[in-house]
Amino acid sequence: MALHEQNPADEPSRPLVRRRTVNPIAPRWLVVMYIAWFGLLLLPTVFNILGPERTWFGAANMYLPQWGWALPALLIVPLTIWKQPRLLIASVLLLSWVVFVLMGFEWHPAKSLPTGPGLRLRIMTYNVKGGRRNAAAIVGDINRFKPDVLLMQDQQGVLEGPVGTCLRNWHVEDDYQFVAASRYPITPLRTQLSDDAPDDHCCVSFQLLAHGRRITVYDVHLRSPRFGLEALTHGHLGKMARDARRRLAQASRLQRYLRHERIGSLIAAGDFNSTNWALALRRQLALGLRDSFTVAGRGFGYTYGQYTPLHMPVMRIDHVLVGSRWRVLNVQVGNTIGSDHAPVIADLFLPGASTTAK
Image (tube, rainbow, N blue to C red; front, side, top):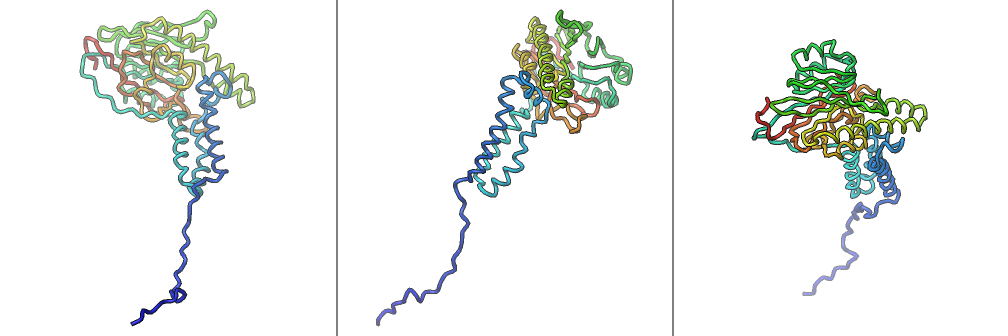
């Protein structure tokens, strides 16, 4: 029996299925956008590394919301999803650059509680602006966090109101714009002056007497950038740079003071009006001090910006600096309604003290 030979032409036709192919090569214009974004992020990073106070642009950028450098993602990411999803990893890397490098995000694991003998100390630094904003909120944070040592700047008679009432059973010393309040005895404040600027008070210092230990503490307030920023809005770029140089001169004077102290057990806290990139802060860290938030903080730790038109904290300019002998257990930021600045609260431990503090 002969096999039937089928004519290929008799085979039923099959519908054609069109498959969407992804071009492995990204469009040139999309690549150019990524290169432009990379260059945009490189600009503030270089100015930060060199020292933001050296130029008006670097000085001004310190006080701008750094999340603004991520705004190109609003355009680039949707275009990437549409045209070349494989490039999304580049978006992730550039956004991480903004979040961690420029915005200063920190996330440290919880520290184990100390078991050996030593001094536990909770310190709070707070630029209270005289309590004009919300004195009740300032008192609320003092009662909430229960610091052992409270350093205030820009006090403007704050002790005459409810804050003073709250601290009536504390050891309190005040001088010029500074207040130091402690649950432990403290020595009178020593105003740190300089022959080249005798009226330019940038800090005071005192001795904390806790469980047989004498701890040197500095309460710091460097020059505000508002004068330079106001000048910048009127196009006076040179005034912004001069303002930054004056703050840097104060920081150099503070560095000279601290150099003569025992750095290992030293505490220097207050309103530095400087971000972590600022030379004003880096000069103190060069002595061997550490910024508590970069050691044990979580999140951005922003302390200023809530009473600007942005209505939210956008920068970390208040710091607690400690010497190498201190172990930083925890750092947190208080409320943002008591003052222009939010307080910074650091839990510290100094090994080797004869008695453990409460």
